[in-house]
Length: 414
Image 1 (cartoon, rainbow, N blue to C red):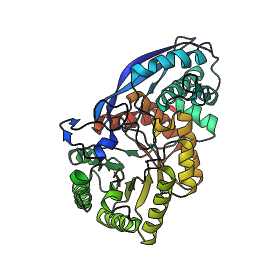
Image 2 (cartoon, rainbow, N blue to C red; image 1 turned 135 degrees about the vertical axis):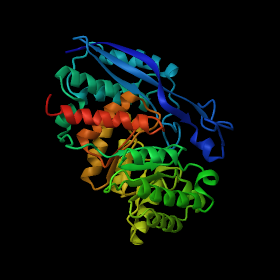
Image 3 (tube, helix red, strand yellow; image 1 turned 60 degrees about the horizontal axis):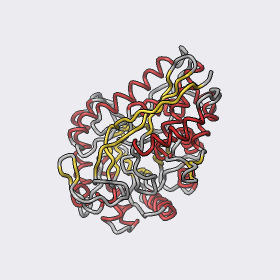
């Protein structure tokens, strides 16, 4: 079966593009907006509407395979590709990507994915924007699945030698700034990993000594105990601090480790994961920092897990963080890795080497990218999979929960 045509349409995402540099510098919330001037190239305001591009392959039999190009909320930060706007990149896809696939025989996913993921943009001499590679490879996977009348998860399992999970992968949900009300939603729905909590500002959210995080963890622990939906409910607590502990403790790793270990005591009996304790501004320093913090936390007898995020963007980055044991877990932030083939390989690589694999992404994705990544999760079995898009809990959780349950229902039928 061949691909007859490639069609693009612009779309919206489930959240926003946020200028992380401006926010860290002190931009203040103003309703859904932020006050202040942008600090990252490409941004017209500190927060602006998220955009996506749907890439649709029309197949010979009339079926339509599609994926969504999307970029992370904090585009342009931490070594990531620049802001992804539909009007800028639809012409690129139509001019350079579509000709690669029109008339192409549908073979394997890996072959189709490599065409865009390893392709070079003639205008720049560089690989294509991560968002383009992300969305087009989703369409490639869907095309192979439709040509074989199989689930996307089945295609992945066959090509990569994995087994589809017999149970749903634990879902990690994001609260955004509504970290209290949304935590209640998570507890009500018995979410297995919660709440993210968006601790991205020292004075307003973290506290000058970290006291606001401590108070929140204590509140959350008590809330779970009070509202738990069933007797055995024991979720993991996972917070993202966006490097702010480095600011609070002036990158003193011993103090950071002591603080994190104490958070673990406050969170008990629930497991605690702390994502992005520091942001060292470049990859090598970040690897060494997370390696050191992990070792110090372990030396204190704490079971708190350190999660890598910033500067751990590509498949090669994830391999490097894993080899140096820079943290206990790595977020595989799917849009940052470009083609979803890279996310698949990243989960497998982490699992084979004892690094926790968190198949993540961003609130700034779409329902389609979340559904496709659910197939990646079910075919590779990471420690957890992000409920996305959005920060409202209900919508993102519903999308990934329902898609994984559909896979479970269909995997032995097709």
